[in-house]
Length: 267
Image (cartoon, rainbow, N blue to C red; front, side):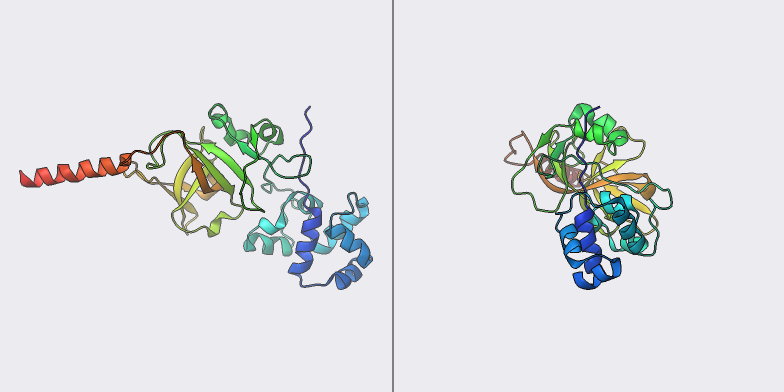
């Protein structure tokens, strides 16, 4: 079986939780019963393998499971999820199924940018959380991407999002807490039970649904239940192998519709 590197967030999570509690290293170390030097080394990532009892001790202190401390980047969670964790509502502790993003990293622990080829689109909704599936995807290192984000490339097919042309590759940035995204945000949405992901303008509605709208007015908007959403990747950029027309296709279509309306009025 191929070994997949799992990114570990223990060091950054310890610092994040300490700062969130507004504690100095000295006070935090005293509360944890460790030396300040040891806590500083842990937060700096200089202690690669703390003893198991340390993990359990820190887990008990923060009321956060060891799995969460190791596997989840707490700084990426929204305020509501953080408050749930701080109140002891950690689904790992309760035996639930907290969504952990499967990623792949290089030898220096930097995240790859995976590309989901067309032939893998149908399997993404079932393999999105499988580290081996993600590890098998093509990987790229793209320059100028913002630090601290997780990015993935998705190909789109069809004309529902014109003027972004059919066959474009969408670079998406993973959204951990999508309940706070602005209305009509362009996103790749991965839906439960679907054979394909969709690229739409997304609006989160108060009744627990998401409105998905196409840029092409020929396609009707539709709603999906929040519990059917597996992943959302906010639009960051796109690449296309098609050279843009001097007059975009959608502009041409709209112009034709306006001319048709004018001729009907003249008749």
